[in-house]
Length: 109
Image (tube, rainbow, N blue to C red; front, side, top):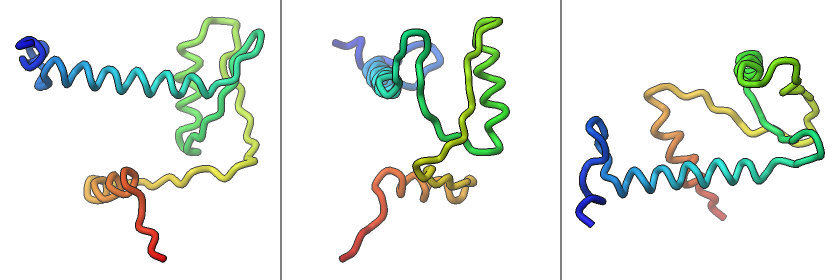
């Protein structure tokens, strides 16, 4: 039991239990996103919203991870749904935006 509250690793400020909790949350998030994909016989289909200025870089990153002579990404710019709002933040506004994203905005009636 004492191992769970000791620092995990030499350069880590987290205890072992905090590290395991963070790892579990990360893995759960990954599997939740993977479950949103549609699987077909020879490909997997998923949808993502990417900021316009990050499209080219994102495609290059995905293609660098793929095998040669196999297409990995196909861009389809159909927008049947409204894309989510992207707020660009700086160090001053990041904290306030994080609070809004976490708790939402007040809806007074």
